Image 1 (cartoon, rainbow, N blue to C red):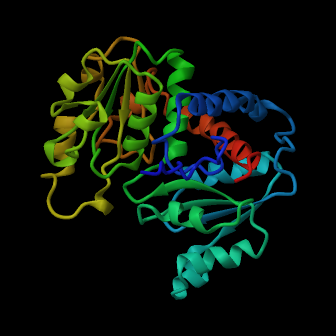
Image 2 (tube, helix red, strand yellow):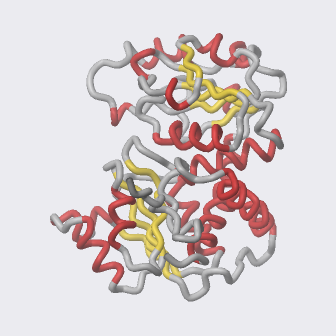
Length: 320
């Protein structure tokens, strides 16, 4: 049986697309995080630019709504000195029935170098990566329920920044794991980076059945799930992806799984609280926690710019 090469890597094992944290080695993940660390200081400069992608064109293709991800990708590409084109999908030919690959082919003819893609269909960035020219790179900005690798990487950067070493950490991912592409990207990255224990915490209706195979422990009560944890990653309830009555009500959910100061006290005293956003205050997290001393939610956003700079800089430097 022939070994199928990871479509994110070239024949030398170098990153040419970022489609998922799954299948990436610890060395590659660490290289991205180390590169991001070099870019964090760019935000503090008077001139917030480096010439790494000068002359390159980055096309942001967001087929789903986004605030943080789209904006931070745009800032990241601009700080790398790239030309940034934000395609307004609602007003593009895609809204008139043009196929995804025809849209990509036409944009490629406009000399695109990097496509940053968010799409409601799982696998869409993989499809695009299979059909672009060898010099064109694809970065997945979230596809369906499947993956959100740059969010996973900025989460890893945040954890490493505050906790230094993954090997002694217990990390709990709490909430709507079933519909969360962030949760899957985090789990793959955490296990690859050697995290001591990864937990998923949520109601049975919102925890997928394959978690044990992914090497994580499942908890169905918040109190047990976060007890003694070093890191707590809260997830948004993704009502737009839910079919049927998976939950009694937002109020009931908050009573059982909302993170309050009282419940947070069950974790380690120096535990950090994370959230990929957008936050639903009073649903998955209380404002006193979101705005509290243990929250690193806003630093996550800041680190996201550096991580996305690192990803685009790395893939653009490698040929298929």
